[in-house]
Image 1 (cartoon, rainbow, N blue to C red):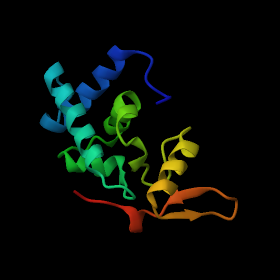
Image 2: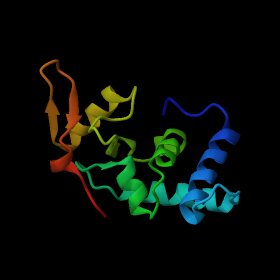
Image 3: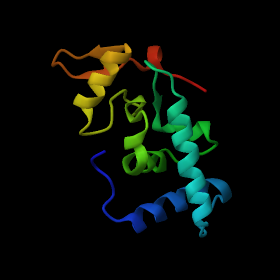
Length: 133
């Protein structure tokens, strides 16, 4: 998926910080194991989202007991290409930036409820498509 962080160490640090902040309410260092666990839990939730349904980054974070929606976004940017990435969207109902066309193909194939603006911009009909594990 495009938009991956260019520096793996910076990405790992950001995910570790987010995972640690959620666990302890501080920014103390966290182990690589905790960061790997955070990534694994995010990807497991994403893979569980049924066809035609979506979750927001915040929904995914909440599903794993976290408040780190941005870390979920970073995880998806770095690791999301091998999972059903299009099923994780912004709270506005829009797919990941720069992936609108690819996401639209998946949404149409899966019958995901969409709404269209007068200018032809789409977004997912979040009340109709939102899924909760």
